[in-house]
Image (cartoon, rainbow, N blue to C red; front, side, top):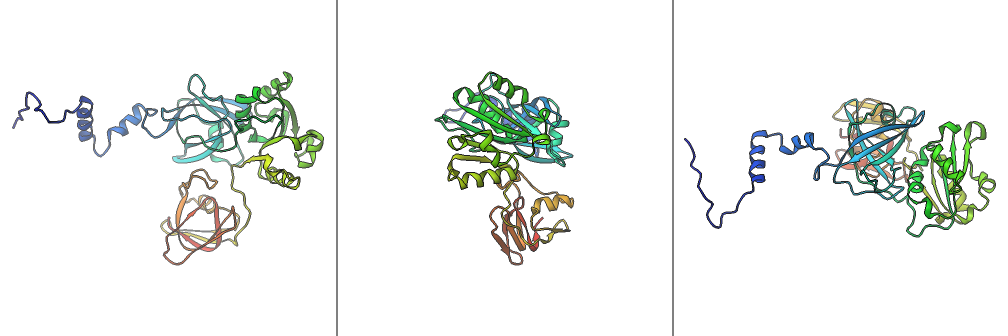
Length: 367
């Protein structure tokens, strides 16, 4: 039977826009796949979509590092120099999230942002990004976050201590604010001169006397220690300091500043949880998966599970995003950041962050 449509809409009946009609019709013929799913394919960077970015270029910096320029979607809210973003990259069919500092100028005319990634031994994501990521690839993004930034009132005398990829958040600050720092010193440690990420740009600033640069090459100079500062930067006590690098270096500098009574003048950035206590280790059972692994008291349950081939949710891997939370049904785990013990009796539904929790005896995870 043919339906007869009214020739006009009576007063009081709400008008539907052509856009609404088309959207309803599209939803009817595409269920259970929604129109938004098709829009994600056609316009993944549109306003209102989950935040994504399109890789514009991948440029080598050193033999082990590369800068990735990304065009974020319209939901991008910008960043403050020194902050980091998490990116979601699919590797072997699994989406992995990692945090990387933004190294580009804030408010680039073309709307792009850059991260600089160093490939680490055994690093699934970092090696993929540096060696296999190609222009045109769509990646997932989170908004920029982090407090490792310069204050609105720029310090009269600033010191930056970095090693390896720890230069990346500092480079974001320097590219945006170096002209606002009347007296800035950077002490950077890398294996060799060629391994210094952004080496050419840093040396150009040093030659122009915009920055005092002290390079330490570990293959010839050894590791940078807190004891070296009296020689390298005699007035370090007078400087507001930002430090980023390996955990051992950060621990040593924090102790040094604390002993000098200057802990409030040192700002550090860490991309891994600080292990301050170890559990006893034990058997971790993944109930639904059926896998049982032996884990020591210093290995996060997330890492232990992945090593055994258990596919687990994850995010930042440093206890910030809560993307790895799972129910602990029975047993005990210890928080690697503060040593706190969490215990679950049989069939409890206690939620733990697997990226910062280690077995403290036998435990069962509902996965």
